[in-house]
Length: 169
Image 1 (cartoon, one colour):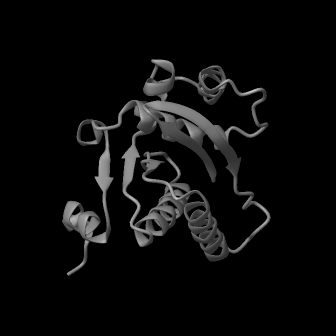
Image 2 (cartoon, one colour):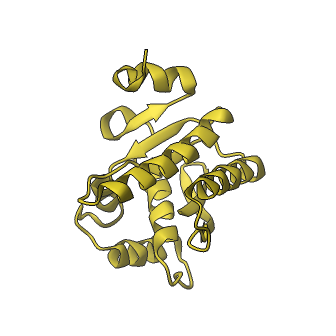
């Protein structure tokens, strides 16, 4: 799971951090979810973000991979919601479009554009972290337009209200 942090001051963005969780060494999927939750809480408690942007689930051919990804995204969202940090989801194509102007851009193209935009000296070997940073930069470009480009949640009540079809009764 990659993540990136930016700081916005007077409508200008500045790079803070870029990293990823190394979860491959853990065989237990539930332990991975716990680690995602704990690390997300740690980042929130350290940096006190005003908002969180996350890549929305995408559809693929491997159902098991999609299920695992959806769970991981849900756990990260739950961490943010538990700290009452508003969350906005962006489709992968919207993120790529916001960063490169091309919704079908490669990970490498997105990473290079972020490097240029944020004046990063080097890029990480694995580009999952730049994916997380791209979501943050996309949100910066779309601030105030979340109703047009993504789904926003300000807490559990808002999440439930906007996802009533997904809630068991």
